[in-house]
Image (cartoon, rainbow, N blue to C red):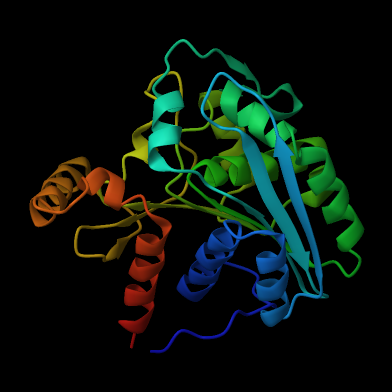
Length: 275
């Protein structure tokens, strides 16, 4: 099976749609002109780019995001960050959580600050662009994955009529505590998909039990096969296999597996393997 073109009329989960959401997450790494050019090539005629510099007690200096739309679909994408940067501030156990969207539960302070710097403009743009009842999607990788999940949750919790059709995240860190996760899981049942690639280190940060993951997991094993669920023992065995495969690689398996191109390659492999 070849990878089909982006379906602007998509309304639910599919592997091809996950692939295009990963590509849309990668789009957020480009500059404004690059995003505009690629969005146009994909058939989106409206694009807005957002960048906000800010100072935090973490090595994160700015937030970048975009919104692109046509008459059928709106996609909000958030840029990720380097593994070393996000790992450093997610392992800082002295960082206090702050109240979550609509005062529901708590979120990591760094995620809250990074999103807040661009959220009002993104919300206003979504409202402005949504003039044909378009489907609404959020996507991101790494830090961008956390921001995509939080933005979708905040938009819904503050304005329930703006419930997104889907949130696709790749290499998402633990973003919030259990109360917000439960509210998110209830609102986004069959709408949120959290992809994890084998030994990717970032989904294991920040540490439990202060922070937890939202549903629903999609796991790539060491051979790149996609699973909707993995028992704990099978997961541990698969992670050990992943380490063994990459034992002599120039960077650790935990870092290599976090790179977004490896998520995209795994999605391609699973799509083309489908009869």
